[in-house]
Length: 336
Image (cartoon, rainbow, N blue to C red; front, side):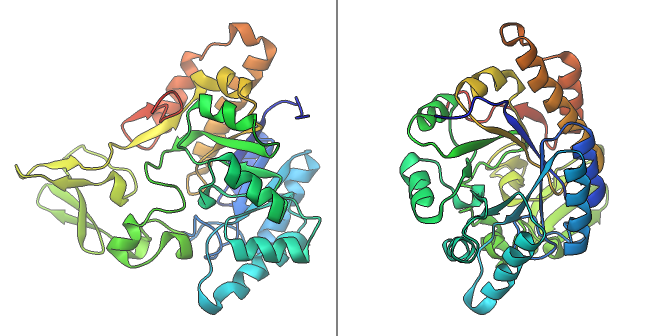
């Protein structure tokens, strides 16, 4: 029988100040990564050395909180030893869970550390019960992070067909592509997101001033051209504006939107989800603190009186003012 305990809040941290901000503002768990290609947010100046993570874990434990560690990219050829080392370091540091995606790394972790708590990363793109139960049978996963491709009704149906814990994104960036299987950035740069751990690696990004315009390019491909007063999220292919037949820059894939499912919290909890996740290990300490506080207050408000739950105006102001992109969205959580 599934636990009826309160839904868990899993919040991002790309550095020690953000980790502390998440814990201090109501996170039950902080998820992190090492500062190398073994995690899917491998940007310069981001993530933790083993010593920094040790300090972060100690900070969390003293406050009764947990730390999950993502080792969720895919080694190539003879690079797997680096991923093995990250697993070894995660176990040595006593991380509360290790978030994995690659089959070989899953096997290494389970064989060498049979008692380790393993979660399946969103990078594995596992969104049906056959797949999830396969990972449970062969690798003993305790939880899966679901891709942002399911409706809440589908989540509820999935809950009825597996006893693996289910974690869903609630706030933050929205990927329109098949998570863990997107090749747009790889096509433009030749550097795979799934192996290097970074979509649109910063070494390929250029900001070019031309008269009163600002061109943003990725490996010499123009992703956007901004006029005076215009802003843009971090340049990725899916959120780029490209020239159409009329010579205008338009969004070809999607307008930049951010996921915000605060209004669906009652339905998500009723669907039996075990954890709500905030996207954003690459974001600022202020963002982590603000989004964690909002989600913590919203969940507490629901449990205090489920029938009278209502999204507060100050939550919307806080989330919408810090989001990447032009507007919030429910993604496909409501319907596809």
